[in-house]
Image 1 (cartoon, rainbow, N blue to C red):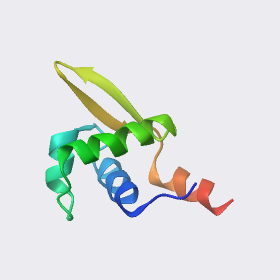
Image 2: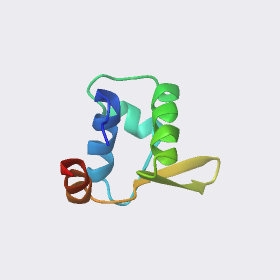
Image 3: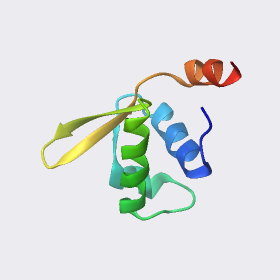
Image 4: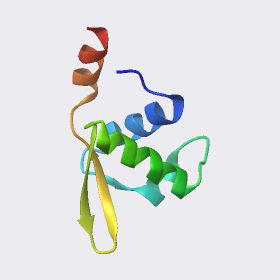
Length: 78
């Protein structure tokens, strides 16, 4: 599965935070500093692809990678 630049950056950040991260925190950590709404859009797409899960915490969602980086790389090599 091919990922765009922003998708890859988001996945890299999620793999570094296995306990999960909120979209606004993730947006602040990315080097390109995208808007939180942009990050949310990409996170929803990644959820639809099955690469990211989300859990409701209060009024926000906590996002986590569903598989580790090694599993993704192995799948991409096929």
